[in-house]
View 1 (tube, rainbow, N blue to C red):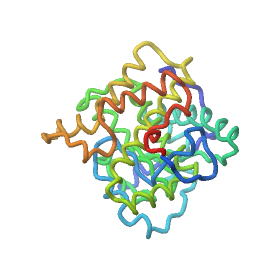
View 2 (view 1 turned 180 degrees about the vertical axis):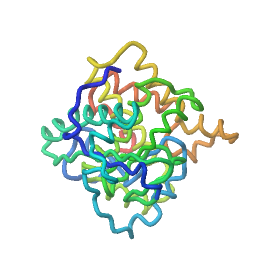
View 3 (view 1 turned 90 degrees about the vertical axis):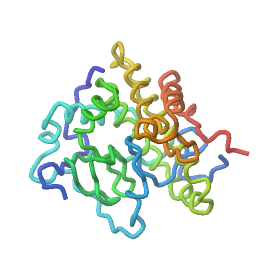
Length: 291
């Protein structure tokens, strides 16, 4: 994927590296299509970790939004220049902002850029500790996309998901959760999960698949940047992070009732829908729950 030129001053970046670690859905503010579906206050991750580890204590936490100036004296420009992966992630973030902000304006929904939060091995987020084992995730409390860029090497070497577009898919998926969060339906869906815990995983799967679809929409709307083999890289990455594939790799028998992100086939399906249509209205993963 050809990277877009970007101005670091126009994106929100923080950097904890070097610190030593640390259905018939209720309506919201508006709809970006999708009939006002969207989300639980949830954290996206790519490694199959238990989201309860991240959500523990979220309600009680008093969170202050981080400053846009990177901690440790680094500016956004310096953070984006730490390594190739950092530069790439910043470029993807800028492209995602440019793609989604006009859609929010057209829908009459307030838009705010997420913050790209770099950390190494361990860090802190508005949702609690950030650890590399969690993989990349989105924290709705501080609107941060958290990533240890070493994950990209793990993704390539251990999961077989190689290539720049596979890495773009990671950021675009997490950004999809930001899109969902900004619609204002998160709290209501979360309440639905709390009221009916038996549906918690099923609803989690649907929001994750929707984030995959949104990642595909972003790719479709930036097809001038797509190169040969990119879409295949994205689909390979989607397959690699399916719940069934991760369970098998961990020596466990895949059990659909335990899925939180969807099977490999489901994740590839919804990423492809976004890629082929470029239309967020087609990302209605909750359609069959509607009366």
